[in-house]
Each structure stands twice: as structure tokens, then as C-alpha cells.
Image (cartoon, each protein chain N blue to C red):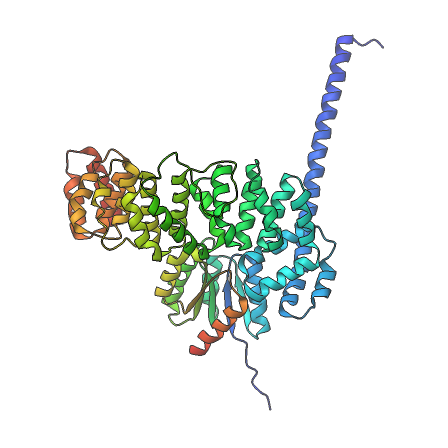
Amino acid sequence: MIEAVAQPKKILVAEDDPGLNRLISFKLEKEGYKALTAFDGKAALKIALEEEISAIILDIMMPFLDGIQVLKKVRTAKPHLPAIVLSVKSRENDLNQALELGASDYMTKPFQPEKLIDRLQKVLGNN
Amino acid sequence: MFIDPYLQTLLIITAVLTAIIMALLAIMLISRLLTSLNRQKYKLKTQQWEDLYLNYLHGDLSLEETAGLMEGEKPYWLWQFFAPYLDVLAGSDFEKTKTLCREIGLIDYYKKKLHRGRTVGKATAARVLGALRCRESVSEMLNLLQSKNPILVQAAAQGLAKSGKTETFFTTAQALLGNTFFTYKGATEILAGFGENICPQIARYLEKESGRLPAVGQGQNIKSPKETPRKNTVNATDYRSIMIDLLGFFKYRQALPLLERLLEKADEETTVHILKAFINMKEVPANLDLKSYLEHRYWTVRNFSARAWQLTGDRQALPVLEKLLSDRNWWVRYNAAEALRSAGQPGLEILEQNTAEADQAAASISSYALSRSEV
């Protein structure tokens, strides 16, 4: 008898800082997710629209297209996709805007990656 | 064979010049090649280190194993590798990174540099040790704040701000203002490194200050509590202004009543900074009447109060804003027009009326604002 193997959930990590992007992706993979990476807004939008992803971790400040614009465009195609937004504290207005656009949660840098994973699990559970 | 001596000299000069040019080209080529090789080497190293580091953070590699594989590498390369992580990590991952940096000797290396290095070495060391929150280096960084060299003062200020030692905040602020040439914006960005926990301290300081106003004014120097002796003096208005800027930067809205009280006795410069703080906080105290500031004799005050007005939408001030459409300063006219544009129908009507006005400046800025509205 062939047993169906559960596919890992795909999470898009959209963060322009390569070190942080790989660190988050590494931690996600260790938790059993499949991380898809994007280092700018355009690439993030392309993956978000084309791939079957379960959630998106989205940095606000990214080249070509910022996180807010990405979220706006993703929201029209995938209104219920869980999104966790990352930003620095001084860009509080952007965070508010992201929450208004339906971001599930946010974290300000610096942060503990474990807490990010906890929150992701929570929003995935809620979803 | 006889060669004309003139021609001979010319040949020698040409040969020497050619040799010099060739040598310079060779030096440039070799240096480019070395830089490129170094870059490639660094890239390869960081790929290896990243793998080790991530596995260490996750607990798959021990501290000793990881440190053993990273030890002996160029300290500056190691620092470049760790710096971005230290900026964004908090909690246990930050602490583990710091422990690793200590184990591979990075902290000891930069502590020595801070103590005995040259300017660039000392400046880098201050930034590294600050980012690693090495409290044992704080006293040395405080000494650097008194340096005559603005580069060292700046690096020490950045180091202290990152170190999280909020008790050094006022000393650092004074040194930045007194010993460097930073603008308000530059100094605010460095001091913001201390984090928003400094806001209650700033509010307490300004509260005391408000008791001393209006005795404080341009040209007077301050004595802040618990500070180290200063070589240079700091203008009281500058110091107060930077404190207000920081409250605005962190959107510390608890300070709104305090800023409103300060505004009553403030000089022009302080007034501008308080209005800017309101704009950053996206809130103006409820009972504050901006009309007198819109009519202020200084254009910077009129300019920022026109921007702050957009947060209140107080209709009684509409006639004053209309007057500002003819202001002699372009920025005041622009922000008055923007304020009217944000006021909805009554503001748009005023702008439309002014497009036909004889006053060229008012007509031009009104048309511009209306065209932006259509977009």
C-alpha cells in the first residue's frame, strides 16, 4: 500500500538582507517547512502569485517594490494568505498600513527568530 | 653611429616616461587583481562561515567546534560577516553570536585596538564592541568621546548607543553636539541607537528644563545632571532640540502634554523642533491653537505649523492658511496649499478661488496643488 507523504508547507521569505533571509529560511527548514526566498519586492511578488505558498514573511523595506506594495498586490489575488511583516521600529506607520492591508502579524527588528517561527505557526494554525 | 644629443635626451625621456606609465599600469592591474581575488576569497569564506554559524545557532555544532573552525581568520572579515546579524538579532541568538565572537578572539582583538590602535582601528573597534554590547569597554568609549578627533567621537557615540548603556546617553549627546559637526538629523540617527527606552529619561530632562525656561536661550550653555566634565560647551537650544527630535523619532506620544507646555515658552528653534515632533508623532495636542504659529514671523515656524495643521484640520484656521498662499517663502506656500488640499471640499474651494487671484504666487501654488489633487 502506498502511503501519501505530506508535502512540507511552502513559506515565502521576502527579505533583502541576504544573511537574515538565509537565517530565517534555515530555521524554517529545520522546523519542517520549505522556504522559498526572494531578495527584492518584484521577485517576492512573482513567487507569491505563481507558487502555492502557505504564508509569506515580508520585509517592508525592499528594493524595486516595497513590502506594502507587494502586500497590496498579493491581497487582491490571495486575500486570505497569512502574512507576517518585518520592519524597523521607526517605520511604525508602514506597519500600521500593513496591518490595515490585512497582515496577520508583525515583528520589529531586532527580533528573536524563534518568536517569528512561533507567530508563523500561530497564524498558520488560525488559518 | 652618431646620434644627435638632443634626440638622445628625447629618447631617454620617452623611455623613462614609458617605463613609469607601464609600472603604474602594472600596479593598477595587480591591485585590481588582488582586490578581486580577496573579494572571491571573502565570498567563499562567508559561505563556509554561514553554514557553520547557522548550524551553531541551531545547536547542531558546539561552540568549541564552530570557534575552532573560524579561529585565526582575518578579524575584519569576521566582523563584516557578523555585523549584519548583530543588527537584526535579539535574545538567545544574539547572545550565542556574542559568545562565539568572544570564543574566536574577536572581542579581545578589538579591545586591544580600542586601547592602542590608530584612528581607523580605534573607530572600528568602538563600533564593533558597541554592536557586541561589550560593557567592559564602555569607560574607554566614554574617554573617546572627549577626543579632539570628530571621527573618534562619532565612532564612540555609535558604539555607546549600540552598547545599550542608556546611562551614557546624555554624555554621548553632549559630545556629539559639542565635538562633531553633525546636523540634527545625523545626531538623532546615531542617538536613536540607544533605543526608545531613553524617551522617559529625555522627558524627565525636558520636564526639569521647562522649569528653567525662559531663562534658557540662544548662546547659553547647559549643565546637564550627572555629566562628565566637558571641553566644549553645547548650546542649550541645540541640546533641547535634539532631545525633542528623539521624542519625535520614537513617536513617544506620552510626551505630548510636556511638549505643549514647552511650546508656550519656546524660542523659534525649539518651536520648530516641537512642531516637527508633532508631525512625526502624527498627533497634535487637542487644545493647541496653531493659528498664532501659522502667523509667526519666522518662515520655518509657519512652514512646520502648516504641516502640523494637516493633523488637526481645524476649520477656523482656513483663512490664515489662505493668506499663507501668498507667503514670500515657497515652502510655506506649498505646505499651506497642501494643508488646504487635505481639508477636503472647503480647502479645495479656497484653492480654486485662488487660481484666479491676481497674486501670481498664490495662483500658481493653488493650481499646482489642485493638479496634484486630480492625479
